[in-house]
Length: 242
Image (tube, rainbow, N blue to C red; front, top):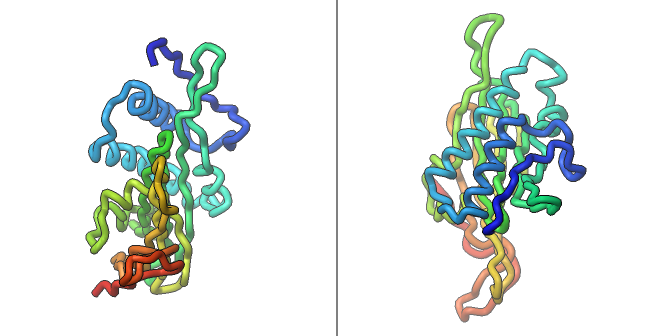
């Protein structure tokens, strides 16, 4: 875009909660989205990691309120990470660049309280998403903190990690308790002229408060190809992970 853009963050956008995310985080993502989408700079793995780090800083502040019943509740945290559009103005025109979102899922594990948190950063038609686990660590009788326990982007498996990080993630809790179990669905972005509809992949996980373990990988959830190369609705091969 040739005209100089006056970048203004809309804090009172009707489509976004008034109190979702800090001003600093929204300013960071406004700059990032503008740099990638409007100035044509490359979206690199290093940029992606920095974006996740920015989310983590926000999470650590929010989970630092663990002694406050209201601010440590799932309902409060959900409002703080709710879907928020990133927008700029060009004179009187409003330009949607993308959106950010964090979703919080409370867990109770063998070692105590934990949070499963999904992160989404969508820039135009370019999604990126991941998840992380934070567990509570008691320091003294009256003090403690939630610390990072596991990051999806650091887990190795039979999947294409770059492809999954470039997808939209959905999480479903399957079981709470000492050994929590949940599943993640990964939806790749749509491509112009794509003949076949998108197809999610799926990973089933177990978490005991210390270690995050993938147990099942399903590359094709919505449809798969049979031996004749025909499209068949439903899940395809299921790969046990040991």
